[in-house]
Length: 139
Length: 139
Length: 139
Image (cartoon, rainbow over all chains, first blue to last red; front, top):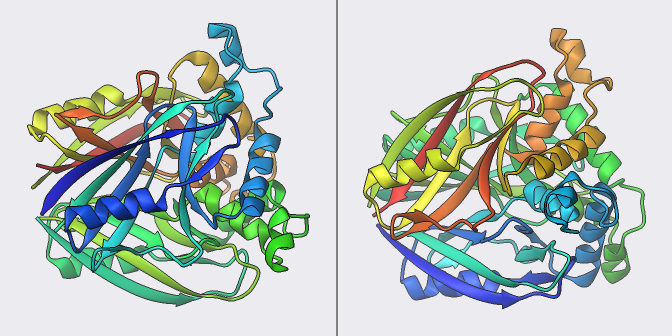
C-alpha cells in the first residue's frame, strides 16, 4: 500500500467555467504505478466544486442553469454583507456540490464510464487559479 | 493495509428507481477480512448517483420529488440537442448528487446509523444495467 | 500505510445549526502521526450532512436558505405518513448533501484552502447528539 500526492493548477474564467480533469487524475494513477486503489480528486478553496458528468457543452450548460436557479448570481446574500464580496452564490453552489470525488481504479485504470468525466466547476464570480489535488492510495 | 475491489450488477427500472445497496457494501467489507478502513461505493456511468438515506418508500419519494422540481424530466435541455437524447434531467441530477459515497468501517462493520442506508438512485429515463464498485481499503 | 479511527460527539440545536469541525479532523490527522493520506469525515445518521464552506454566519445562512427553498420544513412529505415524523425535509436535505467529505493531507496537514472549513450541518428538526467519524488512511 502506498500514497502519492499529485497537484495540478488550472486557470479558470469565472462562474460557469468547467474543466475536464479526467486526464489529470488518470495520469496521477498511471505515474504511481499502483494497480488498485482510489483517487480522491479535491479542489482547494470554497468557491469551486468537483463532480462527474458527461463532459459536453450541453450537459454543462444544463447543470449551470440549475445552479443559477438554485442560487442566482444576482440575488442578495448575507455573505456579501461581511466582506463586500459579490460571490455569495459561489459559496452556496460549492458547498452543495462538494469539493471532491473519490474514484476507484483497478489494473491501473479509473473505473469511470465511457461518458463519465471528472469535472472541475468554477463557481467564483472572477477568474481564479485553482489547485487540484489528486491523492492516490492503493497498491 | 490492503485493497479489494468488488463489483456488483443491478438492473434498474429507470428514473426514480432506488436500490438499497448497503448489503452489497457490507458483504464486500466482511469478505475482505479487514477490520478498519473505508469503503468507497461508486456507480459507473453519468446518469445515476449514490448517497445515504433512510431507505423507506416515503423518503425516497420525497427525494425524487425535489429532483423533479430541480431538473424536471420534461423540461428543455441543451444536452438533448447533441444526441437526440431525452435524458438531460438525468445528467443534471447525477452530477448534483455525485457518483459515490465513502463510508468508514471498524471491527469489520460499516459505521452507518440504524436508519442510514446506502442507496443507488437511477436517474436515466430508461431501465439500465448498473455496475456498482465497492473499493475497500484498510487493514 | 495505516488506518486510524477517531470519533467525536457534538450536540446540535436542530435544523440549520452548523458546526466547524475542521479542528476535529486536523487533530485526528496530527495524532495519527501520518504524513500523507486522506481523512474521511463522516456523520452517522440520515438527517445531517458534511461539506466544506467558508465558515462565517452569512454563508451558512445563505446555504440554509437554499435548503429551505429546495425542501421547505413545513411542506408535506410522504415520510411523515410513515412514522408521524416531522422531519421529511431533513432526510431530503441530508441525502442531497451527503454524509461525508474526503480531504487529502500532506506533511501532516489537511490541504484545505484558507477560507475552506469542514462543516457539520444539522438538518433534523430537533436537537441531536451527533457522532462524527474521522477515518485517517495514509503513511
